[in-house]
Image (cartoon, rainbow, N blue to C red; front, top):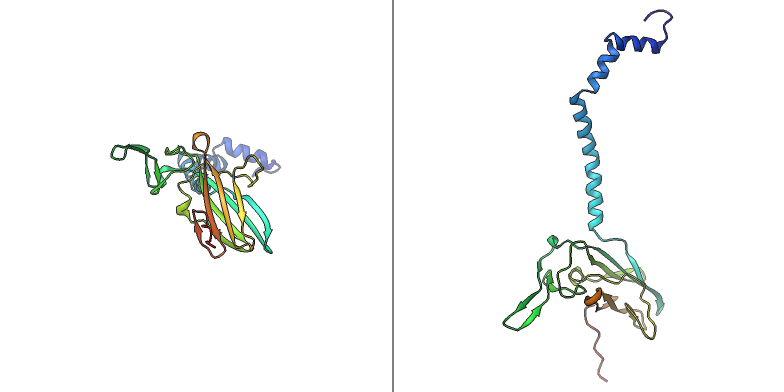
Length: 213
């Protein structure tokens, strides 16, 4: 170093004269290092992108349909939806069956579609993902096989009046069984699905039969 020279001036002189500073800078920014930087960036960003995609196709946050204390037990009903991707399911299209002279609805995973006017829904439309009841701290899920063919489920609170209602929830007086009449569909595909769930884990798609006296 030249006596009395400012360190920054020395760096500038080294750069101009082809010294260590200039050589190191050019070596760092050459093509090989740029490719390394890009490669490391992709390794860092790709997992983030895949995680975001996985989150998008999985169930969205749960919505509260119903909450009340019945028979001393807190009863809550939750629901969630997700985007529909046909390639992730076994599907058939709506078609006319000549032998029976009937129009057969599209199917998803072997079951007729509900809430889509008998047609196979478009990619990305709202598909029922989860439906479950909390009996206090005990959670009972509606099986997935009863959900994958259901589209455009109503996610709002189960409210109704003397004239209109979308989703209606009924609870037995002892707080051990819940009957859900779930509103689904849009336009010509509007429909009502029934689920009966009890605290023991049983779930059916039919209303309970009246006990003969």
